[in-house]
Image (cartoon, rainbow, N blue to C red; front, top):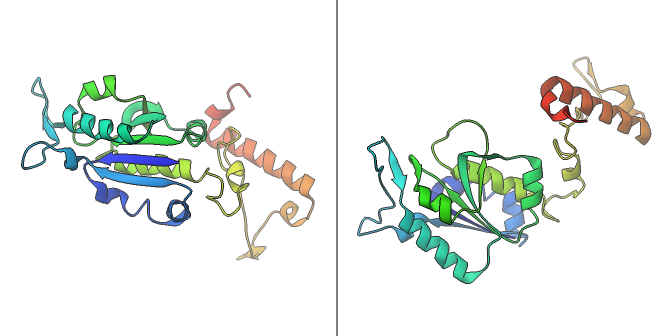
Length: 226
């Protein structure tokens, strides 16, 4: 998989993409993530990438020309399955979207900044808009890192135990059941006996019941239609 991330502040993506599962996946050649500074295509001696809004609204807007030129140059090198804009009003990222996008070969992610991006970019260049929640952050860099992480961990070989991703929250439409590790008792707090029983059938039944109950308590909306 190849992921190209377009941003005004590439430094914000250095650490999230250099460590842990994503960093190892890059090192092992499972994914190629390139972070591009939009200022490379900025206009004039100051490499300007933003300007004031028409209509007089407060805040600066990313200009269409630098974004267009960068995307066009990237498309000369390969075909892209999606050009994604991280937007507060996009479709809310969920596990199904991550599963779907993890099967793609080449993806561009555009990080908004300031007041947003020129609407013509959204109309003519973007194929999909994704949000990480109903709130606003300073730019699309952190949301882009979240999206990239959610895709990379699904790639074959990214996780030490590839079956681990199959039991993550939301893979089956439920949140995950409680998990425990050693010691079996600490400070009088005990691990449920069933997990120590060595009986796979009973353990699985317990995990399934706990996942349903926890989902009912914490995310009941996920149970609609079940």
